Image (cartoon, rainbow over all chains, first blue to last red; front, side, top):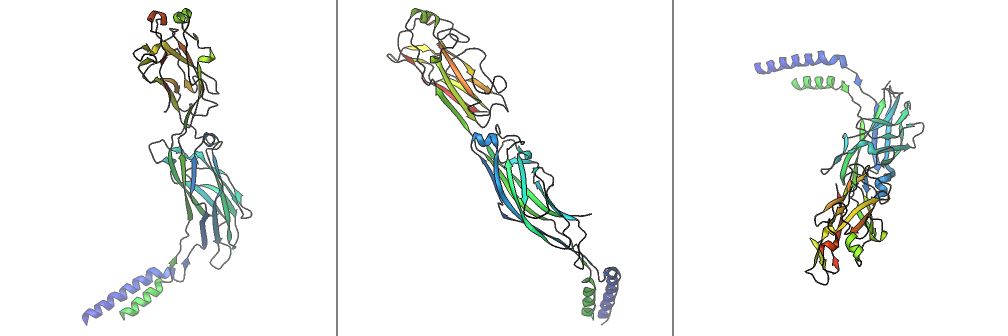
Length: 187
Length: 197
């Protein structure tokens, strides 16, 4: 019986402690009401295969290869316009070079160029040469409380001007990952 | 009582929530496959035949200077990587056709190279500076410059200028006449090999 009383006191003390530390947050929900999704609908793997001197000299183009879909929405707690002033899609390589699977020297990331297009109205589009740091390829303004949905279609080029030609590079299998990120633009 | 306290505490805690936006990402693998391209094509002069039938040819040789197109082999190289080209004879000496015991030293035959493509010596490759003697061991006749030799047939177009008994460069210094070779039809195969660097 004495033991039960002791437990009760301990729990009362515990309860009061919790009350003191959680009261400041009572009734608050701290949340960023941003919904962001980016997903690949086709062209989820990119393979350049060089098998003629013409391809080595002129490079290869995979036109409209990858189709990305995005969904973006930023609202306030009460359903109004959120705090962000826009959104953007960035891309970067997962490594500093296009890595050789054998003993050949790696290829430079600058061998690959990325040229997007989009059906989303009012966006700013930038063609880029691949690097290991994020670069903006699509930028959209503030849609208010409305959602942004649409498709981004990407053309890839490898070894085309102004990138250095791959002629003279050692035959091998080279690989790298592209990381596309959808983020909000904050004021 | 204890359950009541727990329930009250959980109720309070449940009102404090924290949300974190997620940066959504899509990852696409990229691969680049570079297939090896190494082609050596003999365009003309795939069979060189020297016929020695005058004393002048026995003493001075045939095609001194290499200018006679009848004794030239034109070949091209298409390569996706830098390369060398070597030449070697199949046998240690020329072998007589009428009598296999008859032999003629390989170094009676000499060669040098000229280029006629868009590439040049020394920017893209180095060609022999003097006349080489044919040997059984492989020797470079085109030595590619790293980072500059790879290319197509329009760039890598070479002509071997063969000569016999002219004593040029590294060739046998004795004339055919001085060697007193037994008359016969002497032959060997010559291999041109394209070697990636």
